[in-house]
Length: 383
Ligand SMILES: Cc1ncc(COP(=O)(O)O)c(C=O)c1O
Image 1: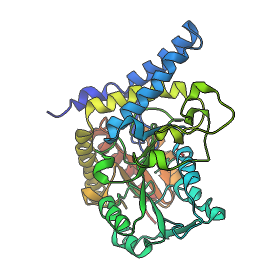
Image 2: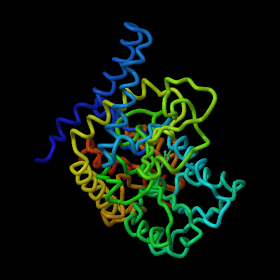
Image 3: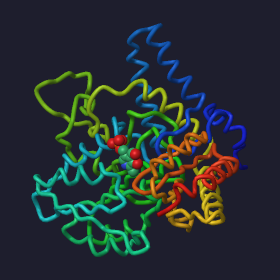
């Protein structure tokens, strides 16, 4: 049975005030998430330092994230950010041998390219796979870049610039045929669609809580395939990455025998409260239903944009699109600001205004956007 999306929408009070189309940047705040943050505050006042409970919140985030991704809790590192997870992972690779190439794409979020370039003094070679004339990166373009010297293919699932979704199963197949590992940056997809790391057969996956996972900034995750949770040893580490945190041993580094070895310091407790509530909410709605709804909303939005003569730059096939529709403008920043004056919350990157959808959006949101865009086309339409 389809979830009652109209009832779910009422759990996000900001939607009564704004047309909120910005979940690819930061989700709308759910009542449950607000209540969880307030519960933390109450705990601070009532108990002070309730570490025994707080640690269970960090573990709850791990378990729920594992459930969401189809992994085991021991394969999940709870990190401060995607960047923190990537830095720990990069520190565990040896780039001095023959397999020193890292393949990234032109669709990467900066951090998933910059961190690999930062490994160049350690021997890494970073190769970028570029887009074709249509603006997309078909899987076969990766075949030219991935070879026997490739250690890692580090790619985004959905591009934050244009909403395009890469053909991950095909790219993974190419990587496997050359013995390369695959890291998926799923920040722009996780929570907006059904995602199973085992089915996708990736070795690592990174994301965070503040976008489609309904949580808050300051908390991320890294999935690490079980076999690598023991064989890879990060040098970027800390006391929460140790086998026995309570040992307080200062004589050696003894990494945990799970993905926890990619963590570092004290967990972000308040963020764990918020993100636990967000993940529970999301899992109760169901990612399959969310994917279907987001595909329908983005498809409808794109059809309406074509009707008003202002087509998006996001791919039209459902399989090649995430939950964001990117609309070209001669001044995308000004367009976002003007939309804000119309009560419509969006964001912008490059020459595109980004309208990101989640299950709590509806057709009225699309119509509000279309009406405003009709108004603004003369001034801020595409070049
Ligand atoms: C695809 C993608 N990767 C990574 C990030 C950010 O990572 P971090 O958690 O290090 O800020 C974002 C944030 O917008 C993103 O869209």
